[in-house]
Length: 97
Image (cartoon, rainbow, N blue to C red; front, side, top):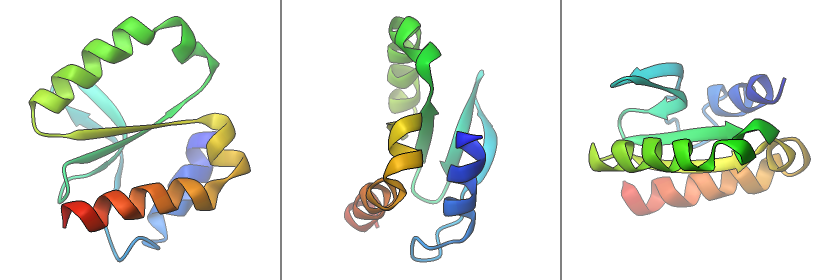
């Protein structure tokens, strides 16, 4: 449900026309959302991620080593403050582009 809400936000191209892909393979991993043009990965994390912080850290380190930036947002942030989430992504895009 939360990923679907995030996808609606990103798919609308409200972020200066940036194109995101959903469930995009990157190496052996699958990114929740990826903007290849910026090498930006947006992850939406539910409660299970609290139990896999070490795994997520290794994954993020590998992705960063491949030149990607990983932004992680909690389900709560996406559902309660979608505009703040989009603004954080927008600010990153402005710095990167």
